[in-house]
Length: 310
Image 1: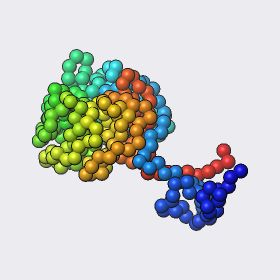
Image 2: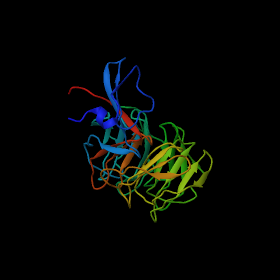
Image 3: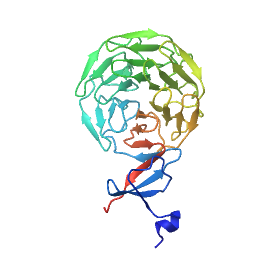
C-alpha cells in the first residue's frame, strides 16, 4: 500500500492548530482536538448536489443563504413556499397570491415577494414573510414580470420586467417609490446586493451581457458578463456576485469581483428559470425548467474535512 509520505514526500504533520493556508491534498493531525484533517482545493469552485425541492418548478423566487434558504411561487402556477436547512426542503405556509415570474429577497425568516404573473395578468401585489406566514402589503407602482430583485424584507429593490422595462422601484418596508431607471431596459435578468448597492446582469431581449451597478441613486454600466444570457439566477453582493444558469449556456457560472466577471465551475445540471440564494462563495441554485426539483450548492476555494472511522 502506498503511504502518505510516498505520495506527498513528507509525514503527516502534528500541529496545535489548523494551518491558515493549507495546500491541496494536505493532511495533518490537530493535537488540540485530537483529530486528523485534510484540505481539498476546488480551484475555480465546484457545485455539489443538495436536497431536492418537494415541488419542481421554475420562474420563482429565492431568498436567504446556502444553508437557510426560502423558495416561493413558481411555474406551474403555485403559491407554495419551502425552506431549506442545508440538507432538505420543508413545505411551509403558502403565498396569498398564486403567481410566477415574481421577485423576492431577504432571509429565510424575513422575506418579501413582489410582482409576477398571476392568473392572466401582471400583478403588483407585495407580501412579506415573518418566518411563519405571508401578509399582503402595499402594491408596487408598476405591475410587472419577470422582475429582478436585491435587498431585504424592509429595504428591497425591484428592476426590469416585461416588455423590456427599465423601471426601478425601492421598498422601505411599507411603500414602493419609483427611482431612476436602468440604462438598458430588459426582462428575465438577475440581481444581487442591497437596495443601495445593487448589481443587475443579463436579461432579454437578445440574451444581454450588460451589467449595471446601482449606488442608491443611479445605475452605471460596468463590465459585461462573459456570456450574454437571460433566465439566469444570481447571488451575493454588488462587489462579490455569482451568476449561474440561464439561456444559453444553462450550466455556466461566473463570479464578479467588483470589476470583472470570470468563469468558474459549471453547474452539474444546466437549467434556466431557476432561483438562487447565498453568496458568491457559498451559493444555492434550485429548481428550474421543466419543473426541476434539483438543488446544487456552490463551494469556492477549498474545504477542510475531518477524517473519521465511519
